[in-house]
Length: 211
Image (cartoon, rainbow, N blue to C red; front, top):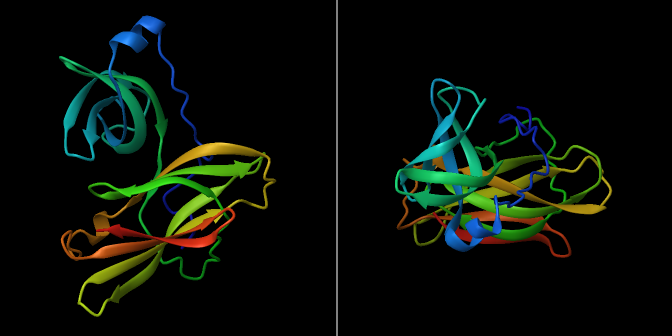
């Protein structure tokens, strides 16, 4: 299986927060969310589904996307009476864990800014250092173990191939690891996740998250 089965061709994504004018900054209450954007038959992202389960109408849809598809985005928006207005957005690199059989696994270092679990995802904000080469990401499924008390532990690892890029400039990148394949076999009240990330200056660091 190829490392980037879920097509991570948009590399080193970053958000530029912008607003139309200073008045908007003062009057509006902005929210930032990792969320799913659902497109309609015309390819317009007209519905935003938050990780808390809210389904919100987008009054200024992102257009020219694939129709009837779900996309993962980080969005900055303002709530209005008739839905939400998106101020800024960027795609999130999103995919499911893979065992990467017969494929070399790269774990080039990154700088972790945050990691947390939401409803069906593990979300990461990274600083990725590079210059002009294409970086590729993925999520390695290292299997499941059972602890002495009987709870299950899902072992995951961040795949990162920097293609030997120079450590020249930092770029903020957003990733989401889908946990949907495990929702019928793991229990929220019982099980946990160990997520390993090779961090700059630290080496492999294991982050424990409640499932």
